Length: 351
Ligand code: DP6
Image 1 (cartoon, rainbow, N blue to C red):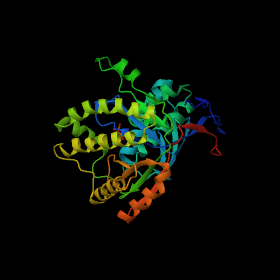
Image 2 (image 1 turned 180 degrees about the vertical axis):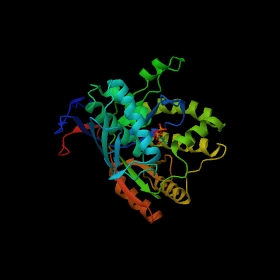
Image 3 (image 1 turned 120 degrees about the vertical axis):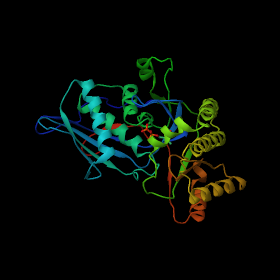
Image 4 (image 1 turned 90 degrees about the horizontal axis):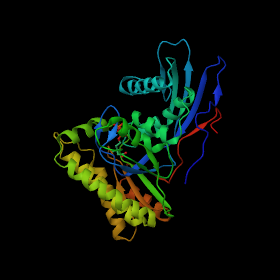
């Protein structure tokens, strides 16, 4: 399922003649997790990962080149981007400028509909949209594979949000040749049989997380005795996951995703000091997922760097799963997502 979209076209020419582009991207949820980098600068992961792009919480990013400006001007949800978020975006724009041979600063305006920092992958949709809009505005002329590599440099998981539906992100060859690794580390669509899945998202806490996923990942790789065994088993999980997707066996997909996510959390719990994102409400939802299975519903849970739970199930059971999760965790916000589209350029009207 390959999407066509107009890559590297300028969708607007502003009144002062400067180039501008707007892109929309959706978050993705990993079913085989990315957890651990082997190169921090290039954002090369230790393992391959596999995700489903969602049809909720899009990020829309507008990039306009600003001739004469002395610095980038970045706005996130209407407020100037400060601190780490602002630094990461400027560093990313520096990379785009280096490739474009340009020293023009940019005005970046981003509307994020996902709660930032809540373990719902706002950086995935954010850097996928930024990569696509900035590449177009600076005239880089990149195809989807190159955009995926570029988005990876902003945030690893963003490499997967360039594509819709199910996507695999290749770690790239690990031979010590960093150029080859950089070139080989990109995402691409995964062919699947008909699955008709839903992801029931239980936001049990929308606040910012105590430890950033970047720091938690680093600490896990550096100190957790469980990291290497998990990374090794994750390779087998990916093989099994691909087979389950090809067969259209949603129950197996869920089972593999759940064991992979619980294993990832085990690596963090064993880090020194431990990183524990799972809260009492998380465990309550996990118990309810077990109960649903006992009642014959093929529901399986996955969690990222935060307390929120995403429950994979057949679309036909999504309402029942959502009701059960709401009943178990009445303070949570529950919504149902499905497979969503890849990143795309849009015009000013959002089309
Ligand atoms: C737990 O992509 O946010 O969501 O590359 O440091 O920006 P950086 O990390 P990020 O990590 C996502 C980790 C995860 C699992 C996943 O999405 O695969």
